[in-house]
Length: 264
Image (tube, rainbow, N blue to C red; front, top):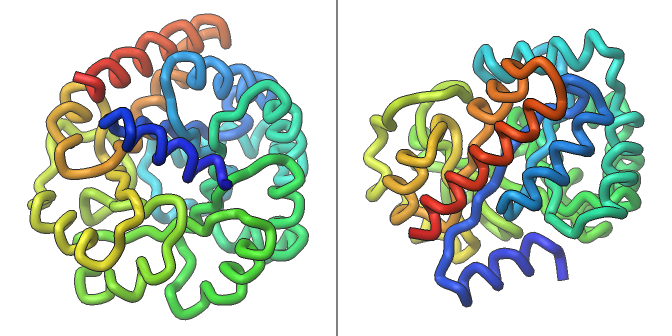
């Protein structure tokens, strides 16, 4: 069984919500990436998304864009990211999901990329810029290696949600707002009706992301979903701390606070 399924099955039995966290690989360094993954796992993250740096991340706001730029400046490459994940996987069973733009996969070679992800212990892949009409090939490759291609849906795509979530596995990434990733104080979307539409077409767990940035928001919006995704707030914490020890300590406290808010 895929680790993502195991996590959501356990959380359902415990009547709890999933905490899905995001970091950029290679920011501030690849060694730090491994340490941060382990730290967030211990602090209560149920699934961890790892962003592969890309020079033109259209779906992301300034915080993650800047972290990608720093990682690329550090010379981070896809192979080095996969190698670090393989090393880290020996120390944890937390589900790991790559957030990666399709251009990176195309240049690397789709079959080679997914095959290497499988060998490293990756459980899922999110491709934010992959058109619905072009996902068949990559999904078939993912299926052959038991890696889940996680679909994204957004409030503006209500007419296509049924098609997007067809045969979904793992979880559906429900974008909470129209726009890019980033920290927000509130979400303007009518989440109740939006999530009802998604639930109408799939029984796969729904995770809400893009904009949730603190424990208060996590607690407020948890009734509408099976899990919350926090990315920019975490990347921001890492960027503001002078050293890896300082950032992991502050990040561990942040993750614990959100975990506690979801468990209320």
